[in-house]
Image (cartoon, rainbow, N blue to C red; front, top):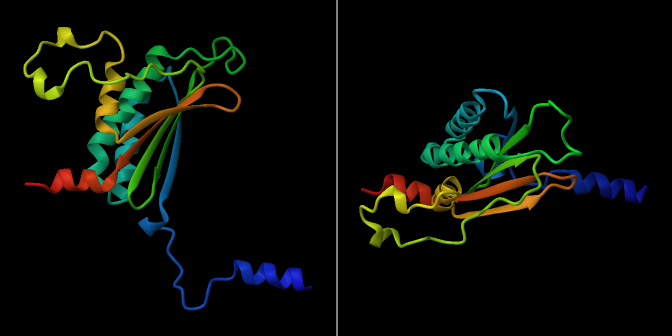
Length: 185
């Protein structure tokens, strides 16, 4: 009886502490969308989903960067991902999962695919943006430009292997930094 009683009190709200609404941004948010690479509008669908949820969550200051990041990552899956043999059936559509998670200070974006091959994350800048000036695009690398854009926009970029194959590319955006950049005059 005592163990049963302690379970009840452990889950009961603390006296004097107001309950937070599920819509309170301090609780964070999570949304996910599954797309298929063969769908002609999958990149647009991912971009629109991100914009819609961020607007709903009062994070309009993060929409442009987040939509560009998602466009680049989903586009990479569409154009480059080859599913692991054990994850895809011959002729089946290639699955893409897009996740958005927020906490009060950060937005985390995850794009998962069925290809276990690690992403080719650029090691660093080829040249300093301040020194580049009006250099022609011919000096940009032939590969990895999308991930270079993602690295420029995000505060952190990393990837993780899926438990049963595939991978997820993750990006973290500092919401306070984005707000400050959008509200500086």
